[in-house]
Structure formats: C-alpha cells, structure tokens
Length: 490
Image (tube, rainbow, N blue to C red; front, side, top):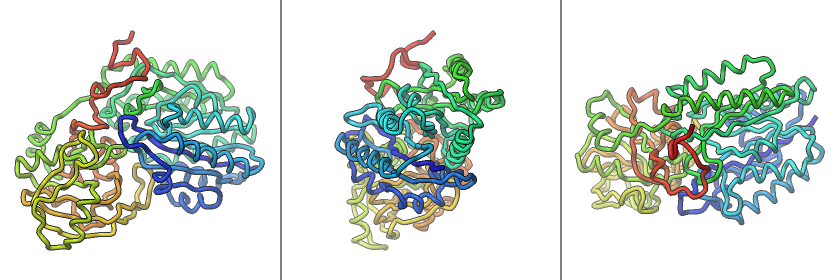
C-alpha cells in the first residue's frame, strides 16, 4: 500500500512588514518526488519521522511535495498560488494512494487566505476524496481551525517546546496510518478551541505551568479508546480569528468521546488561565540580575525571536550593554552590509564606528555604532549532530564575520537570518560560550535545547519588536473575542 507525504510549512508573523515570497521557500526547502528523501532522511524533522515510521511497516513511502521557509511575514498570494498548484499537480502525478501523511505548520497566513493551512488541507481532501485516510502533524505553535480538523482523520501536535520530538511525532503518525490501513483502528477527532491565549513566555513545556498541563494530557492517553491527544500552545504573532490555544483528542471510532475529552482538557486550561500570563523582565532589570548570577547567563531576546519571524537584527539589549560598558557578552546580528565591511577589512583590522543591526525596521532598536576589531571571517556553514529545535542538521549563515567592541561585547555578523537553535553557530566560528557572562539568543523557548547545557542561568528579556511577549503591544484586527487575557471569560 502506498502512503503519500505532503508538507507546506510556514509560521507567518502578520505584524512583519516584509512579505514572504517564493524565494524564501527556494532558499530553505522546495522539493518534489525523489528529491525529498535525501533532504530529510537523517533529520529530526517530522518528515524524517514519516520515512522512519513507514520503514517499520510494509507501507511504501511516496514523497510528493515539501515546501518550507523560515518564519517571516505574511506569504504573498502569488507565492501561495504557485506552491499549491505545484502541490496539487504533484499529488495527481503520484498516482493511486492508500493514505496521506501531511505536515502543515499550523500558523500559515497568506495575503489571500488567512487560514492558509485549513485552505490547502481542504483542497487536498477534495482532491483525494472523503475516504482516503489523512493523518496530520502540527507545530505546537499552531492556530488551529475547524477546517483543518475537518480535512484530516487525525492530527498529532508536537509535545515539546523546544521542539525536540518532531521526529517522534512523525513516527507516531506513520504508525497510526499503518494501524488505520490494517483496519485495526478508525481514527476520529475533535478539537476544543479554548478562549485563552497562552503567553509565549509561559510555553516551556517541561517547566510550570505547562509541565503539569502535559501531565494531565499524558494521563488521558491511558484512557481506553484514546489514540492520541494534543495541546495547541498557539502562535500570538498571527492576527487571525483562530489565534489562541486549544486541544485535540483522537479516538478509535468514537467522536463523542473525543469531544468530551477535548472539552475536559479545555476546561483544565480555563480553570488555570491566570498561570499562563507572562512574567516580564525588562532589560535593565535583567542586566542587574545577570551581574549576580553564575555565567554564562543566556539572555533570551523575546522581541527579536527569529523563530517567530523577527528580523534578527534587534539591538536594544546591546545598547544597554554598551551604556554600562559590559559585562563581557556575545550576540549575533543579521547584517549583510556590516558583515561584508568586516570581511573586506579582514582579521586584525580596526573599523571605527561600524553601524551594526537595527536596519530592517525601526521596531527593534537603532543601529549599534561602535569601534570594532575584526576577529575572524567564516563561510557561515555548520552542522548540528544533536536533536535540536526544528530538527535541522545543516545551517547556512552566509558570509560571516566576528568583531569585538571596545566595551566587552563580541558580535557575530551574518548574511542570512539564522535562528539560535545550535551552539554550532558559535563553535564553528571559534566562539567559546564560557568566555562570556552573557550570551544573547534571539528566541524565547527554542534556544534552550542548545544553550541550557552551557548556561547555568537564563533570563527571558522583555524587549520590543514584532515578537514581543507583551501581547497588549499588538493591534489585533481579526482575533476572536472574548479571548483571555485581553478580555475576561467565565
């Protein structure tokens, strides 16, 4: 029996001014047919899990179409039309199928379709008919719609943040497909869309308040008839009607049970909703605390969270470090112009008043102007052997330079936005984490998988920007109401 594999993945931040285009997908992953397997065979991504899980069975994996781009702004209508047309054409060319494993992100938004993932999943369902089993995986930072639920027989969401279980969820989906096609089970699902938005600062799944919420969900998995359940943490940077948190339960041919248990999980969150409001620490407070802590201290720059689509050139923390003339710190900035200037100068050369970062927009701080010495230059390529957030193993920062200021701050300047998901980003450029009191990582939860092993302390810093942890900062036009914490709920 033949099981197709489809994916269109993008986490769309609708508050970003720059749109996501076809070139962004071409830079990351845009592949069909036999070109897909070599990309994901060794990855910790859910598509790698699809392949690994199907290998355990007698089912044939049929890779059809995969498109993925780094989180960014709303996708252009033209790009979506191109991607979906290619997807549906590849699906038709794949021939007869017995099932589909699909991997949307869950927070995709286009200029033409605000519920992008619900839109393309519905088109796929229409193309294959009502009887073909479709099993879906989702990022935990999804904004799930009923349209997405209706298009699939089962939906399985990552259970960790940082997302280090992606491959496991892909294997789980493949195993469920095998049981489904053997006639052992008949998945039915229901979702509860809770009127609560869990703040991203509270979304670390192995810490409270999330840890005990997952304990309740994991205990429910022991209930007879339950095949799967999932917690939707939500993605607050997509201004869509579905923005917020929720729960999915998959049962064996028992939709009433799925509905009852999903609602039960939803009520648990409603009862504890105050625990999921943000605890915000400002920049100056964070610096005061860091001076008293064992280093390195990881500063999580929440307003410039690359994994949430930010520009990666925010400078607000760096200006504060400059004003204090320390402590010894390291940060990475996306700035092709400054990187090229440092590369052209070469190692050992002093560059007066180099302007770094703060060039994409006016939301993340002004350029940091400093006298620097070029320490080293690199091609920006590195690999990650461990399981880290996102499941990637190969990274490409583009031409990269490391410079040192005269006030204790070392800055890596790269030519491509690169999220801090791997310490290889530092070590590949001869940066030793232990040399610094503060390591600035542009994220909220995702960097923890890489940085926690070398940072005895971490502080989530409330910085301004398109990924601010202060949800009151955003002017939402489409979100549902009432939605806690914006409005009270009963």
